[in-house]
Length: 177
Image: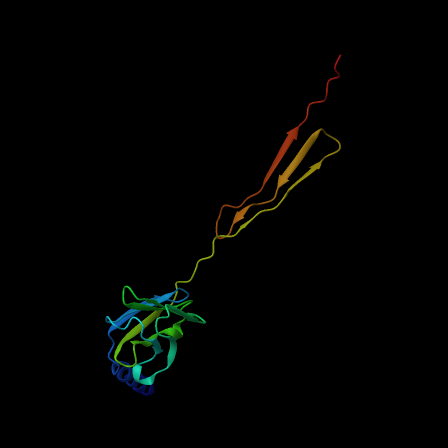
C-alpha cells in the first residue's frame, strides 16, 4: 500500500513536470490525430513529431523541408502548407500510445507538447447466434399421411425455442374417365 502510494506520487510528479499545451483523447483501436500549427515562414522547414517531451527527443517522424507527407508503420505526418499546420496520425491506437508528444517546426524554435489520453475501447457485443436445422420428412407406409418435422430454431439467450410437426393428408387419386 505504501509502495503503491509512493509510485503514484512519483508518477504524478513526473507527469506534471512537462508543460502540456493541448490534451487530446483517442479510443483504443481507432485513429488518433495530433494537429500542430506553425508560424508563417516555416512552410518549407523540417517538421518533427516526438514521443515524450521535446528535451528527450525520441523522434517518431520527420518531414524534410517542403515534404507534405511521411509515413512509417502506424504513424503518418501530413503537412498542409496553406493552413500552416501539420498533423500526426496514429493508426490503431493502443493503450501504450498514451502520453506526451511533442511537435516542432524548424529546429527547436517552435514546439508544442500534447498529452494523448487513450481510453479502452468498449467491448463489442456479439450478435445473438441463431441456430437452424434442416427439414426432415418421412412417410408412414400403412397410410397416405406424410409427416414433416422441423427441428428447433432457437435464439441464443431466448426462451422462444420449440419444434413443430406437420401432417399432410393426401386424398386417393380418382381415375380420370
